[in-house]
Length: 514
Image (cartoon, rainbow, N blue to C red; front, side, top):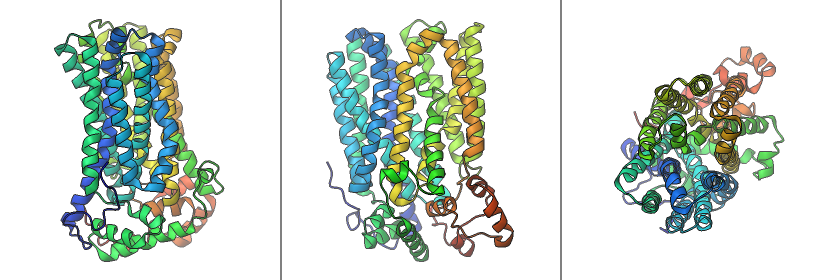
């Protein structure tokens, strides 16, 4: 494993006084390598759609064993996400990310060499540990190093790359399916290719900086200021940011899992409700089961040839990526809430039409269109479930909170993936999609009633807003509203902004990515 430290004094050509160009390069380099961790999960999800039928044929897997291989990774990832948060808080974001890559690569290697279900299952479990670490650490790391005015776009590139990985998995699966004749050779090559991304991440980590917020949290203030100086080409902005981070950390009295999961304050209760609610809402409509079992859905729609099933999975992956590419750039302009409401409502409509297409036998073309529509609108809303849990918690609790969110997210996803075939057999395929449609309606209502707007706010600002410590623009008129309204009204109203932002609007925008 490459040597990991904060990056201070180690990066070639690094200086404390950054130029806008060097700061921008560092931020984008960090985003690129961190986002590659999501490619691990994305490629796995996409490639398993092609690998599972070949595994079933080669290893003579039963339906239960097939479901177990598909869903176990997410369940293990969810359980191990708790350990990932602890590791990230104890060892730092960079070291924890390196550990995730090593574990994932090891698991993929074991899967590739498996000759029976149990060895395959062992490799799947180890791979799930790596995925759980990566899904916690990468969004956490990114949320702590990117500028607030671009945080929505840059952090959610994590989810964009995940969908690139899914589409890549579909493409690789199709190419291998039509190129090779032996099922055992097919799926082994499909899985082995997934070892490449963690190797690239490990090679890139020495050129990244440790999170300045984590450095400040553990008392390495000088290093934190040096890292901020390389990320923000404005000495005054660096001092302001360092002061804000210190103030938020100083206000924290405890940072245990108990404080996150059994909150004592209104702000922490709101943060827990938002973060865990988003994690459940993202997966409960069945998206990952649709991705894992796209070939099976195509089979139910009348496509019996396995290569053709993989071919028609490609538009599904493309639609999923297209939804993300449209949604993510709008997060920092239109906000989080509009994307959630549009995405949730249209998922419900798409799933209803998909159910009807099976019931009324509208044909394969209609089924494909509605599957693509569902995946498109799923991705309009999905990135926010990765982004917002890292926004609503302060530095000391952020790692554990992100772990809890990923745990819930992966457990819900794994539970649906591991039971999708059984549920479909019990209540039929259209009945299953009708169930998912009803859940999407409930999810959309919850989005509307609960989720606040965090667009453009620094992480410390969000913490202050939820804790009702924010300075207001219209103090006299807002004071009554502040006393009478809930936290969601306060946040979504847009009346509460950071006191430095009015004073140094142009100066404090980090001068990155203009």
